[in-house]
Image (cartoon, rainbow, N blue to C red; front, top):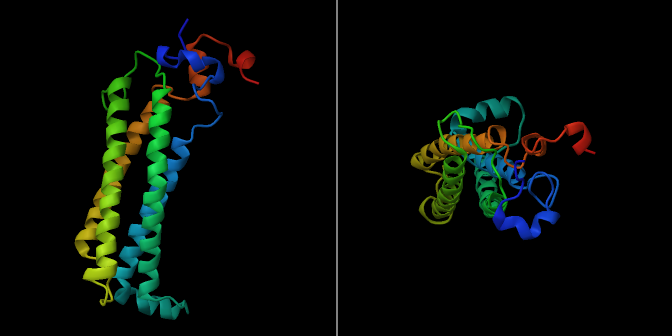
Length: 204
C-alpha cells in the first residue's frame, strides 16, 4: 500500500490528515493568491499613474475625483503589503513542502518529475521573494528620493520589470499547480485514491 507519510515525518504521522498536513486546507496556495493579487494591483496602479495625462479627461468626464499621486499611493502601499505577505507565503510553502508526498510515477506538462518540479518551485519561490524585495527597494528610492518632486513617480524601466515579473510569476505558479494537479501534493482525494482507499468510506 502507498505510504501517505514520508519517513522523516513518521513521528508526527498521527497528527497529519490524509493531505499530509495537520490542518484541512493548505496555507501556501491561499497566501500565494494574496501575493499575486497585491503585486498585480501595485504594478497596474503605477501604470495608471504613469499614463495619467492620457486618462485625466476620461476621469473628468466621469466626474471621478482622482489624482495622479493617488494611483501611485495605491501602487506603493500594495507593493509593501505584497512583500510582507510574500515572506509568510514562502515560509508556509517550505513547511508544507517538507510534509509533501507526491504521487510517484507521473511527469508534468513541462516533462519534469515530482522531485524536480518541487525543487524548481521551491528555488523559484525564494528567487521571486528576493526580486519582490528588490522591487520594493527600487520603488522606495523612486518615491522618496529620485522622483520625489516629479508627477510620474515611477520609471518606465520599473514598470517593464514589473511586467516581466508577471511572466515569471505565471511560470512559477504553473509549477505549483502541477504539484497539486499532477502529483497530488496535499490533495486529500488524490492521496486517498493513491493509498487504495474508497473515497466514500474514507471521507466524512
